[in-house]
Image 1 (cartoon, rainbow, N blue to C red):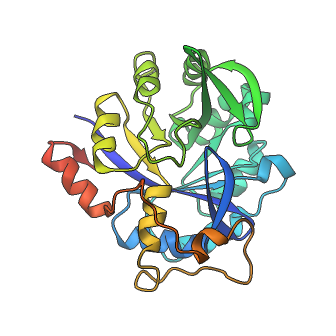
Image 2: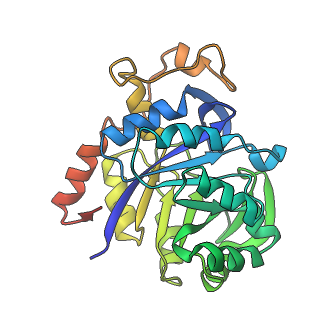
Length: 283
Protein backbone atom coordinates (compact mmCIF):
# COMPACT_ATOMS: atom_id res chain seq x y z
CA UNK A 1 0.00 0.00 0.00
CA UNK A 2 1.17 3.53 -0.78
CA UNK A 3 2.49 5.70 2.04
CA UNK A 4 0.39 8.82 2.57
CA UNK A 5 1.90 12.23 3.29
CA UNK A 6 0.44 15.15 5.20
CA UNK A 7 1.62 18.48 3.79
CA UNK A 8 1.15 21.88 5.41
CA UNK A 9 0.51 24.44 2.70
CA UNK A 10 1.61 27.98 3.52
CA UNK A 11 0.37 30.70 1.17
CA UNK A 12 2.66 33.72 1.40
CA UNK A 13 2.09 37.34 0.42
CA UNK A 14 5.10 39.53 1.09
CA UNK A 15 6.45 38.58 4.54
CA UNK A 16 3.18 37.09 5.77
CA UNK A 17 1.21 33.87 5.86
CA UNK A 18 -2.23 34.46 4.34
CA UNK A 19 -5.32 32.39 3.68
CA UNK A 20 -8.50 33.02 1.77
CA UNK A 21 -11.61 31.21 0.64
CA UNK A 22 -11.65 29.89 -2.91
CA UNK A 23 -8.21 31.52 -3.29
CA UNK A 24 -9.72 34.97 -2.68
CA UNK A 25 -10.23 37.45 0.18
CA UNK A 26 -6.83 36.87 1.76
CA UNK A 27 -6.69 36.95 5.58
CA UNK A 28 -3.33 37.71 7.14
CA UNK A 29 -2.43 35.09 9.75
CA UNK A 30 1.16 35.80 10.76
CA UNK A 31 4.77 34.83 10.17
CA UNK A 32 5.09 31.85 7.80
CA UNK A 33 8.36 30.59 9.27
CA UNK A 34 6.86 30.42 12.78
CA UNK A 35 3.97 28.32 11.45
CA UNK A 36 6.39 26.10 9.53
CA UNK A 37 8.45 25.51 12.67
CA UNK A 38 5.27 24.64 14.62
CA UNK A 39 4.23 22.11 11.97
CA UNK A 40 7.68 20.57 11.90
CA UNK A 41 7.64 20.10 15.68
CA UNK A 42 4.22 18.46 15.34
CA UNK A 43 5.37 15.83 12.85
CA UNK A 44 4.28 17.24 9.49
CA UNK A 45 5.70 15.31 6.55
CA UNK A 46 6.33 18.20 4.17
CA UNK A 47 5.97 21.98 3.87
CA UNK A 48 4.60 23.62 0.72
CA UNK A 49 5.26 27.34 0.24
CA UNK A 50 3.14 29.19 -2.32
CA UNK A 51 3.84 32.83 -3.16
CA UNK A 52 0.30 33.83 -4.08
CA UNK A 53 1.17 37.05 -5.91
CA UNK A 54 4.54 36.24 -7.45
CA UNK A 55 3.19 35.52 -10.93
CA UNK A 56 0.72 38.39 -10.79
CA UNK A 57 3.37 41.00 -9.92
CA UNK A 58 6.31 39.27 -11.63
CA UNK A 59 8.24 39.03 -8.36
CA UNK A 60 9.37 36.41 -5.90
CA UNK A 61 10.08 37.17 -2.24
CA UNK A 62 9.83 33.66 -0.92
CA UNK A 63 13.47 32.57 -1.17
CA UNK A 64 14.54 34.46 1.95
CA UNK A 65 11.65 32.93 3.92
CA UNK A 66 12.71 29.44 2.85
CA UNK A 67 16.36 30.08 3.73
CA UNK A 68 15.25 31.14 7.21
CA UNK A 69 12.96 28.14 7.54
CA UNK A 70 15.53 25.53 6.55
CA UNK A 71 17.77 26.58 9.45
CA UNK A 72 15.14 25.26 11.87
CA UNK A 73 13.20 22.50 10.15
CA UNK A 74 14.25 19.34 8.38
CA UNK A 75 11.42 18.04 6.26
CA UNK A 76 11.05 18.32 2.47
CA UNK A 77 10.09 21.81 1.31
CA UNK A 78 8.40 22.77 -1.95
CA UNK A 79 8.42 26.30 -3.41
CA UNK A 80 5.74 27.50 -5.84
CA UNK A 81 4.89 30.85 -7.38
CA UNK A 82 6.79 33.04 -9.81
CA UNK A 83 9.20 30.38 -11.08
CA UNK A 84 9.48 31.17 -14.77
CA UNK A 85 12.53 29.31 -16.07
CA UNK A 86 15.36 26.91 -15.23
CA UNK A 87 17.35 29.71 -13.58
CA UNK A 88 14.48 30.44 -11.17
CA UNK A 89 14.10 26.74 -10.39
CA UNK A 90 17.81 26.44 -9.67
CA UNK A 91 17.64 29.48 -7.38
CA UNK A 92 14.72 27.93 -5.50
CA UNK A 93 16.62 24.70 -4.97
CA UNK A 94 19.74 26.57 -3.88
CA UNK A 95 17.64 28.47 -1.31
CA UNK A 96 16.82 25.15 0.39
CA UNK A 97 13.80 23.77 -1.43
CA UNK A 98 13.72 20.05 -2.17
CA UNK A 99 11.03 20.37 -4.85
CA UNK A 100 9.39 23.09 -6.89
CA UNK A 101 5.88 23.45 -8.28
CA UNK A 102 5.00 25.10 -11.58
CA UNK A 103 1.66 26.40 -12.81
CA UNK A 104 1.67 29.59 -14.90
CA UNK A 105 5.09 28.98 -16.45
CA UNK A 106 4.17 25.41 -17.40
CA UNK A 107 0.93 26.59 -19.03
CA UNK A 108 2.76 29.25 -21.04
CA UNK A 109 5.61 26.94 -22.01
CA UNK A 110 4.86 23.21 -21.52
CA UNK A 111 8.33 22.35 -22.81
CA UNK A 112 9.67 23.80 -19.54
CA UNK A 113 8.34 20.67 -17.80
CA UNK A 114 10.50 18.46 -20.04
CA UNK A 115 13.53 20.68 -19.54
CA UNK A 116 13.13 20.90 -15.77
CA UNK A 117 12.56 17.16 -15.35
CA UNK A 118 15.62 16.42 -17.48
CA UNK A 119 17.88 18.87 -15.65
CA UNK A 120 16.70 18.44 -12.04
CA UNK A 121 14.93 15.06 -12.07
CA UNK A 122 11.22 14.25 -12.23
CA UNK A 123 11.01 13.77 -8.46
CA UNK A 124 11.86 17.47 -8.07
CA UNK A 125 9.11 18.76 -10.37
CA UNK A 126 5.48 19.16 -9.28
CA UNK A 127 2.86 20.60 -11.58
CA UNK A 128 0.19 22.61 -9.79
CA UNK A 129 -3.27 22.61 -11.37
CA UNK A 130 -5.93 25.01 -10.07
CA UNK A 131 -9.37 23.73 -11.01
CA UNK A 132 -12.88 25.13 -11.28
CA UNK A 133 -15.82 22.89 -12.19
CA UNK A 134 -17.96 24.02 -15.11
CA UNK A 135 -20.86 21.64 -15.67
CA UNK A 136 -19.31 18.19 -15.92
CA UNK A 137 -15.87 19.50 -16.87
CA UNK A 138 -12.98 20.76 -14.78
CA UNK A 139 -11.05 23.69 -16.25
CA UNK A 140 -7.52 24.79 -15.34
CA UNK A 141 -6.72 28.30 -14.11
CA UNK A 142 -3.66 30.31 -13.10
CA UNK A 143 -2.99 33.29 -10.81
CA UNK A 144 -5.04 31.89 -7.93
CA UNK A 145 -8.03 31.22 -10.13
CA UNK A 146 -8.01 34.59 -11.88
CA UNK A 147 -7.04 33.52 -15.39
CA UNK A 148 -8.55 30.69 -17.46
CA UNK A 149 -5.82 28.77 -19.28
CA UNK A 150 -7.93 27.31 -22.06
CA UNK A 151 -7.03 23.84 -20.81
CA UNK A 152 -9.27 21.06 -19.55
CA UNK A 153 -7.84 19.51 -16.38
CA UNK A 154 -7.92 15.82 -17.26
CA UNK A 155 -6.11 16.26 -20.57
CA UNK A 156 -3.61 18.66 -18.99
CA UNK A 157 -2.86 16.15 -16.22
CA UNK A 158 -2.11 13.47 -18.81
CA UNK A 159 0.14 15.84 -20.72
CA UNK A 160 2.21 16.96 -17.74
CA UNK A 161 2.78 13.32 -16.76
CA UNK A 162 3.96 12.52 -20.28
CA UNK A 163 6.35 15.48 -20.13
CA UNK A 164 8.09 14.15 -17.02
CA UNK A 165 6.40 15.73 -14.00
CA UNK A 166 6.95 13.72 -10.83
CA UNK A 167 3.74 14.73 -9.01
CA UNK A 168 0.58 16.72 -9.59
CA UNK A 169 -0.94 19.08 -7.02
CA UNK A 170 -4.68 19.40 -7.62
CA UNK A 171 -6.36 22.43 -6.04
CA UNK A 172 -10.14 22.59 -6.08
CA UNK A 173 -10.83 26.32 -6.12
CA UNK A 174 -14.51 25.62 -5.46
CA UNK A 175 -13.67 23.83 -2.19
CA UNK A 176 -10.64 25.82 -1.05
CA UNK A 177 -10.99 27.32 2.43
CA UNK A 178 -14.53 26.02 2.94
CA UNK A 179 -13.86 23.04 5.23
CA UNK A 180 -16.46 21.08 3.25
CA UNK A 181 -14.12 18.34 2.08
CA UNK A 182 -11.91 17.59 -0.91
CA UNK A 183 -13.38 17.26 -4.41
CA UNK A 184 -13.24 13.47 -4.47
CA UNK A 185 -14.84 13.22 -7.91
CA UNK A 186 -11.97 15.28 -9.31
CA UNK A 187 -9.38 13.18 -7.45
CA UNK A 188 -10.91 9.98 -8.82
CA UNK A 189 -11.04 11.27 -12.40
CA UNK A 190 -7.35 12.13 -12.33
CA UNK A 191 -6.21 9.02 -10.45
CA UNK A 192 -7.89 6.92 -13.14
CA UNK A 193 -5.71 8.31 -15.92
CA UNK A 194 -2.29 8.99 -14.38
CA UNK A 195 0.21 6.92 -12.41
CA UNK A 196 2.30 9.63 -10.73
CA UNK A 197 1.38 10.74 -7.19
CA UNK A 198 -1.56 13.09 -6.66
CA UNK A 199 -1.49 15.76 -3.95
CA UNK A 200 -5.05 16.81 -3.11
CA UNK A 201 -5.62 20.36 -1.88
CA UNK A 202 -8.71 22.38 -1.08
CA UNK A 203 -11.48 21.66 1.40
CA UNK A 204 -10.07 19.72 4.36
CA UNK A 205 -12.22 20.42 7.41
CA UNK A 206 -12.43 17.24 9.47
CA UNK A 207 -10.57 13.97 9.80
CA UNK A 208 -13.11 12.00 7.76
CA UNK A 209 -12.25 14.11 4.72
CA UNK A 210 -8.73 12.69 4.70
CA UNK A 211 -9.72 9.04 4.49
CA UNK A 212 -12.26 9.86 1.79
CA UNK A 213 -9.67 11.59 -0.41
CA UNK A 214 -7.22 8.72 0.08
CA UNK A 215 -9.85 6.18 -0.89
CA UNK A 216 -10.51 8.13 -4.08
CA UNK A 217 -6.83 8.09 -5.07
CA UNK A 218 -4.90 10.85 -3.29
CA UNK A 219 -1.30 10.03 -2.34
CA UNK A 220 -0.84 13.16 -0.21
CA UNK A 221 -3.09 15.78 1.39
CA UNK A 222 -2.05 19.44 1.35
CA UNK A 223 -3.84 21.35 4.11
CA UNK A 224 -3.95 25.07 4.90
CA UNK A 225 -7.04 26.48 6.68
CA UNK A 226 -7.67 23.53 8.97
CA UNK A 227 -4.09 23.44 10.23
CA UNK A 228 -3.64 27.22 10.43
CA UNK A 229 -6.85 28.00 12.28
CA UNK A 230 -6.37 25.21 14.80
CA UNK A 231 -2.80 26.36 15.43
CA UNK A 232 -4.08 29.88 16.07
CA UNK A 233 -6.48 28.72 18.79
CA UNK A 234 -3.40 28.45 21.03
CA UNK A 235 -1.10 30.88 19.24
CA UNK A 236 0.95 31.86 22.31
CA UNK A 237 1.52 28.27 23.39
CA UNK A 238 2.44 27.38 19.81
CA UNK A 239 4.90 30.31 19.54
CA UNK A 240 3.21 31.75 16.47
CA UNK A 241 4.32 35.23 15.42
CA UNK A 242 1.55 37.47 14.08
CA UNK A 243 3.66 40.22 12.43
CA UNK A 244 1.17 42.81 13.72
CA UNK A 245 3.09 45.77 12.37
CA UNK A 246 3.81 44.30 8.96
CA UNK A 247 0.70 42.57 7.65
CA UNK A 248 -0.55 42.47 4.09
CA UNK A 249 -4.18 41.44 3.85
CA UNK A 250 -7.18 41.41 6.17
CA UNK A 251 -6.07 41.20 9.81
CA UNK A 252 -9.59 41.73 11.20
CA UNK A 253 -10.31 38.01 11.07
CA UNK A 254 -7.70 37.37 13.73
CA UNK A 255 -8.34 40.51 15.80
CA UNK A 256 -12.05 39.71 16.13
CA UNK A 257 -11.23 36.15 17.21
CA UNK A 258 -13.83 34.73 14.87
CA UNK A 259 -14.58 31.06 15.34
CA UNK A 260 -13.44 28.50 12.82
CA UNK A 261 -16.66 26.49 12.91
CA UNK A 262 -16.12 24.56 9.68
CA UNK A 263 -12.83 23.09 10.83
CA UNK A 264 -12.48 20.21 13.26
CA UNK A 265 -10.06 20.65 16.14
CA UNK A 266 -7.67 17.92 15.04
CA UNK A 267 -3.89 17.98 15.33
CA UNK A 268 -1.47 16.55 12.81
CA UNK A 269 -0.73 13.70 15.21
CA UNK A 270 -4.41 12.92 15.80
CA UNK A 271 -5.09 12.81 12.06
CA UNK A 272 -2.18 10.43 11.56
CA UNK A 273 -3.45 8.22 14.38
CA UNK A 274 -6.92 8.25 12.86
CA UNK A 275 -5.59 7.21 9.45
CA UNK A 276 -3.42 4.46 10.93
CA UNK A 277 -6.53 3.04 12.59
CA UNK A 278 -7.79 2.51 9.04
CA UNK A 279 -4.55 0.67 8.18
CA UNK A 280 -3.26 3.63 6.16
CA UNK A 281 0.52 3.70 6.02
CA UNK A 282 1.90 7.13 6.83
CA UNK A 283 5.25 8.64 5.84
